[in-house]
Image (cartoon, rainbow, N blue to C red; front, side):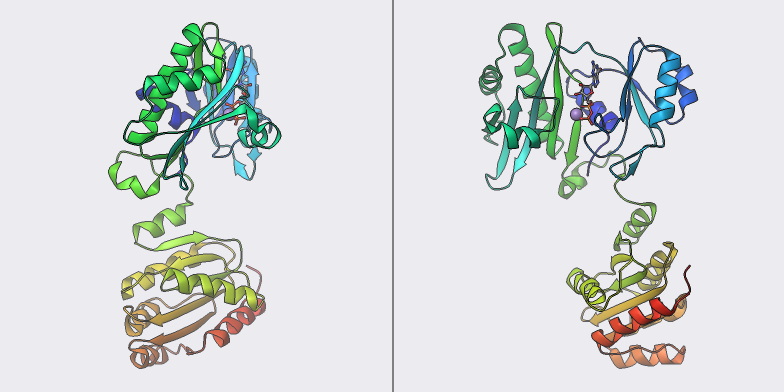
Length: 371
Ligand code: GDP
Ligand code: MN
C-alpha cells in the first residue's frame, strides 16, 4: 500500500525525521484559515511521482497566490490520478538535493540503502544515465543500519562535518522506520540541504500489505475504489477493470483464465472477482450485487468450477437475487446437478462448457443496449 506524502510525513515525524510542518486542504478557500510562514509550497497529494514536472507543485509568496495555486492544482489529473487534496508547507530554501531510500531487495533477501548526490530527479533516470552516481549498500537484517555504516554512505555522497552527522542520523532513523513499519520502500527525494542541516522535502512510503495485520492503526488504503473496499469487507477479491462484462468465478486461477477466455472471444472484462473456495449463497449474492453496481455493465459471465465450492450454494445465491443484466453462466463440479436444477427452477439456464459460456457472454454484451 502506498501512502500519500502527507501521510508518509506524519510517520516520518514520529521517527524523528525532519519534515516541514504544514496542513492539508481540499478547497482553495481553506487556505485563508491557515497560519503559515510565507513563501509556501502547495503540493498535489496523489499516489504517483513526478508531481513537480507535471505542474502539481507550486511555490507561492502570498496567501492570495497560494489560494490561486491551490485552485490550479486541485482537480488537476496527474498520471491518471485526480488531485483531491493539497499539502501546504512553508517553503524551504534548498541548497542541494540528495536521494536516500531503503528498499526491499528480493534477490538479496534484505533491504538495500540506495543513495545519491544527484537527488531531486527520478532515481530511475539517474540509474540510466549516470549509474556511477548511485550508491547501493546491502543492509544486514541482524545489524540494521548502524552509525558507522550510515556515515560511510554519507561520506560516499560527499558529506562531511555537521551535514555528515545529520545524514547519519536520518539514515539510521529512516531504516528504523522501514523495519518497524514493515515498509517495502522508504524514500526521501529530495533530501535537501537547508543551511547547515538536512530536510526531508519529499517522503514516499510503500508498506508491505502482507504485514498489515501487525499495523491495525493504519489509514485505509486509497489505492482501492469504494467498491473494491466494500468487496474486501465481504471477503471477496475484487478488482475493477475497464471493460463491460462483469466476471465472477471461484479461485484466482480460474478467474484469471476466465478473463483470458473473454479476451480470446473478443470481450472485455469489467472486473476480476474471486468468490473464493467454499463460497456460500450469501457470498455469491454479495458478489453479484457488487459487480452490477459498477457503471457500464452490459453482461455478466459467471464461471464456477465446483470443488470445495458447491454448485448448489452458488445457484442459491444467484436465484435469491437474479442478475439485472443478461448473464451467461457456466456451472460444473461438486453438486452440479442440484445447482443446475435450482437455476432451471428460477428460469435461468447454465452450461457446463466454459468456451460456450464465454462466447455467449460476449454475444450478450454486444446485443445489450449501451448503458
Ligand atoms: P515530486 O515531483 O512528486 O517528487 O515532488 P517533490 O516533493 O519531490 O518536489 C519536486 C521538486 O519541487 C523538488 O525536487 C524541489 O526542487 C521542489 N520543491 C519542493 N518543495 C520545495 C521547497 O520547500 N522549497 C523549494 N525551494 N523547492 C521545493
Ligand atoms: Mn520527490
